[in-house]
Length: 112
Length: 113
Image 1 (tube, rainbow over the protein chains, first blue to last red):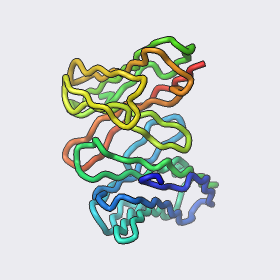
Image 2 (tube, each protein chain N blue to C red):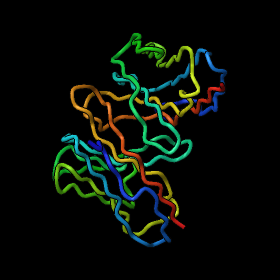
Image 3 (cartoon, rainbow over the protein chains, first blue to last red):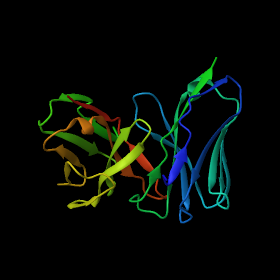
């Protein structure tokens, strides 16, 4: 079993829809949870991160962590065609970057 | 300010050939990483370097060597390329002042025939 599971999609939605992207994990020691966005043929770029449980909002994006269920989500409100990309979840036990585990990524298409 | 640069952008090798992937950063960060990205597998850590002159193995180090001769540059070498090393390779640095958030380069697409 992989430490981090993420549905690869693709997920196709109309412009303006609310998008929900999710990951599950098995290691209860994870404390830092990140979301990266990767456009085609580009490197991943950090969208947002949260520590432990709870929600974090940044503009149209909301990251949610439920440690009791080992489940994290990224919500995108009022989705735009420019949001079309692959979204990678990532998580780690502590700082230092040495044990960051990435999900395989979910491909999202937002249709105009 | 280019951030993290990688060369080359694309490369095609024959089985058994060697090559070095170059990564350079101008952000003055200590920690640098090499990942490979394969369909359905996500990003997997090959090697990392916590500081100049130090390197450590990641999840998939076999078939690779690295060199961190100065703070700015971190190179990845394939001594005898194999088709299983066909992948997209990303260099990254660890951003300071936060948790495990990383800044990635644009990637090198490598095909081994």
